[in-house]
Amino acid sequence: MENTFSVFNKPKVELHIHLDACIRPETILYFASGDREAVKRIAYEFLETKANQGVVYVEVRYNPHLFANCNVHPIQWNQKKGDLTPEEVVELVNEGLKEGERDFNIKAKSILCCLRHMPEWSPEVVELCKKYHNDTVVAIDLAGDEGLKSETFPGHLKAYEEAVRCGIHRTVHAGEAGPPSVVREAVDMLKAERIGHGYHTVQDPALYDRLLKMDMHFEMCPWSSYITGACDPDFTKHPLIQLKNDGANYSISNDGSLPMGGVALDTDYKVAKSQMGFSEEDFMRANINAARSCFLPKDEKQKLLELLYEAYGRRDF
Ligand SMILES: [Zn+2]
Image 1: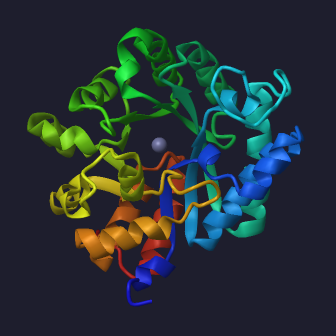
Image 2: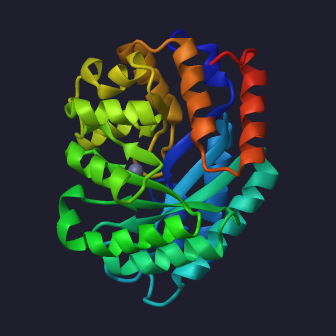
Image 3: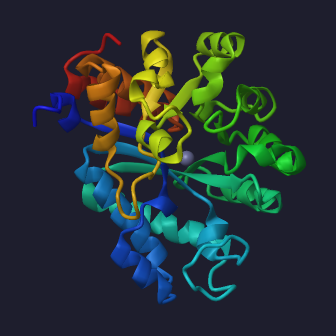
């Protein structure tokens, strides 16, 4: 245990993790049988895993169309087209999350993802965000290849404008593999309140400085950035170190980057501690940042912050 701090065993908040990357291998087989209960089970088991990792609040994200298997994305689960609608998927995930909350002493909300290569799905994604607003769904996200943005962007922009109009929270994957201009677009055009990853923001000092002043939240996923090659594989050069040193508003999440079924947030914490110079206080601050930047309604957010202050034995962050 010499590689851990006591904070590793204290309550954690995780804001950036993909449900579809966190399915247990045995459940993938179950899913292939076509049993729609599997979608519910995936959400339920996800919360069991997260609770075991000391996560007290998680915002889990997914694209409902992929689970519904619209036969467009090369997802290999052998469902027949039309087995589930995206709306049924959201209802099943909601049920699984609510049951998991009851059984595992964890709080959970969900974020519905638009995909950059599928702008035709985005209108339905935002409608589902509206229909299930605060019924576990708290926000919209945009994920996928940042290089595709020019031809697909108008469809996503429209969905985000509707989200703004309806008070749906917004996060965007930006500056992960892509350049700072994608981050600027996310903030200025899509009205993102948080940036997923955002590593390459630091390459544009003016933009970075502006986002620091705005207290923009960065959802950092260090192990994922290593797996995907989004950053220099040398962790001692990782942009997260600069964010930490600059007192930026960031949090640490896993992203679901480990092989199927693996969602060990501890991997990210260990890397941050051993190779990025994170102190126990830095980890506490990252979790307080996550709590104050989460998409919970105001009163629930305050309760979450109180829970962390209590567990950390201090509130001077
Ligand atoms: Zn992600």
